Structure formats: C-alpha cells, structure tokens
Image (tube, rainbow, N blue to C red; front, side, top):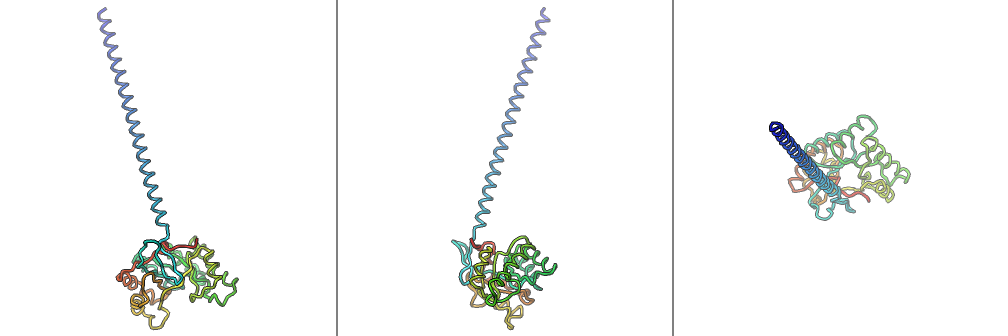
Length: 272
C-alpha cells in the first residue's frame, strides 16, 4: 500500500515537473518567436526609412540646379555654385571624340558631345557613340549634315533634326537632351522643334579651336583658360579635332586651378 502510494506520488511529481518544463519551454518559444517578429518589424522599418531617404535624395538630385540663359551661359538656380563652366564638343564622333571622352573620364570631367548624323552611318561610328554615352557623357543634337538652318525650309530643317534624334535613340536607347544649331544659327522653327523634342537649346560663350593660330594644343589650352571671356557660367565650345583632344587635360586642369567647377549636364534644366 505504501509502495503504491509512494509510486503514485513520484509519478505525480514527475508529471508535474514535465508539465512545468513543457510550459516553460512553450513560454520560451513564444518569447523567442515574439522577439524574432519584433526584430523583423524593426528591420523592416529601418529598410523602409532607408528606402524613403534614398528616394528623397534621388528626387533632390533630379531637381535641376542650372538653366541656360538667353546668351547660352549656365545660370544657377537657387543656391547652386555660380563659379562653373560647361564643356561641350561639336562635330562628334569624327576621329578624336573617343580620345577626348577618355581624357575627360580619367579627369572625372563631365561634358556634352554634340553629334552630327553623317558621323553615325558606320558600325564603328555607332560603336564610338555608344562608348561615349556608356562613359556617362551627355549627347546633344548638332543636326545631320551641319547645314545652316537659315538656308533650309522648315521641312528640311525638321529632317535635319529629327533624323539625328532617331539615329541616336537607336544607338544608345534614348534621344539627345540638348540641341545646338550649326554656326549657332537657330530659327524660330528649329528652336521650337528642339524644345518640343525635349531638348535644351544652347549656343556658346566662346571657342577658338577652328582658328588657325589655335590649332595647336598648347596655344588652345592657354586661350581657353586665360581668355577674358571666361567667367561664371561660361559655355565652352570645342570640336572633335586632334589639337583639341591633346589640349583637353590642360584645359580641365587650368579651369579647376582657377576655381571653376565643371557643370554636370544632367543638372541643367530641360524643357517642361
């Protein structure tokens, strides 16, 4: 009798201990699970906050910081740095555009390459443009054949401009963002057409590389940096030429040594 009672008590105690242990284990599991869920929630909130901050930063970066004035200088919007210069290269991609782009890339110097359609007919020329674009440079429209738009009918001018947009889009997947008329000779029609196509129209502040006395890299670099025309917002015109390609590193260094920041074309306002 005593043995049976003792056995029952022992069995009861063991059962009670097991129940308590299971209960504690269940509570521990619940607590761990709750902690994990809280950790996940916290992590999700952090990810959401980070994503929101990144989106806000991206939106701020996309806001234009500069606009092109009526005289084609680069004007700051709000509190953007005013001591800037814009590098542009016309008649690309002829023979030296890729070399120019590589020098600029090495110097971390942004620029716009204005292209002519008659330089985009061969596979090699198309590949050159793609390489320039892939290096991060903005592409502008400089018409198909470099004709003076004042000498063309509206239909001819339209063909000169639209054809280049179509060529560029086929090669790099997007249309040019800027337009510069050959010889700086815009018409009311060409200007409106360019803006309707989403391109910012510009001429330039100064350029020298077509003049015989500056068809030398040292002379060109010197005048581009030391001309009295250099000032805040200067829009520098250069071309796809051998002497220009050789002068690019010194031009970039010289401008920066004078305190000029080189404008990223992506920060320039487009037509709304």
